[in-house]
Amino acid sequence: MQSRIGTAALCGAVRPGNRLVSASILLCLFVLFAFALDFPALSGRVVDQAAVLTAASKSDIEAKTRALEEKSGIQLVVATVASLQGNDIETYANELFRFWKLGEAKKNNGVLLLVAPKERKVRIEVGYGLEGTLTDALSSVVIASAIIPRFKTGDFSGGIERGVDGIISVLSGDTADWQPKPSVRFDEHQSDLIVGTVFILICVIIFVLGVLFSARSGRYARRGGQLLWVPARSPSDSSSRWGRGGDSSSGSSSDSGFSGGGGSSGGGGASGSW
Image (cartoon, rainbow, N blue to C red; front, side):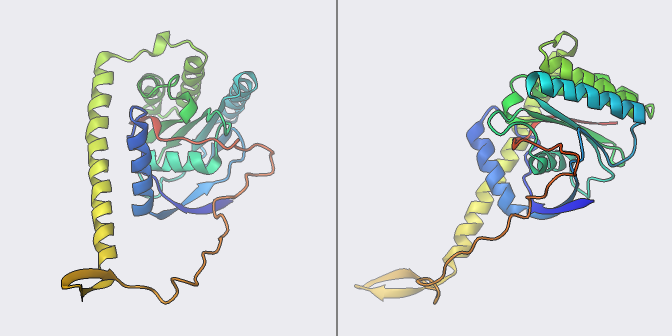
């Protein structure tokens, strides 16, 4: 059973280096790109909508992620989806993470490993509170060295299991096998700078268009010998009140009892394709 939610926040390429810019970009793009996505229900620690995992692998992953949460409080969820519904995986992963509210509300310590076999895309989405531990660079290495080589041979179960092992290893402080090469750091930094600049320009354009749009509601009037712009007043300005609508994103998870803890993500993580 799927739930319907209207939202958007294109922030997959924004990194934790500049919180103010990240927040501005999220707000601007949320207003500009509003669309509907169909998300699967959070039925457990493994949501295999694309049906690519074997029963044994699913059971093994559930056991490992449960042990991680019991030990550290970190909520790691694995999801495969039938389709990204025409969106890039960064957008879909961030929205799904927020919809499921992975991780604890105060710690934002959730992690989502998302696989889209149809589009041949994979992403590790990281909650705010874990961005300093499971960094973008480390996430990229886990994807490139542990997940994608197995996906290329059609071994989705093996790739996902190895990816989960890598994520848990990094979160446990063992990063020796996942240190990024210098070129990985440089390429990601360069890419982030370019995409971040484009997003900021989009925000500026939105602001200018908003000003121009609002300026159309009014008229010029001569007062005291000067020509002034007088905004038009709506007949309901003095009497209208805003009502509170229902929260369309408050869908509950399945009857399994497993659910997110209220956490959020700002787009930290990494993506890959094969």
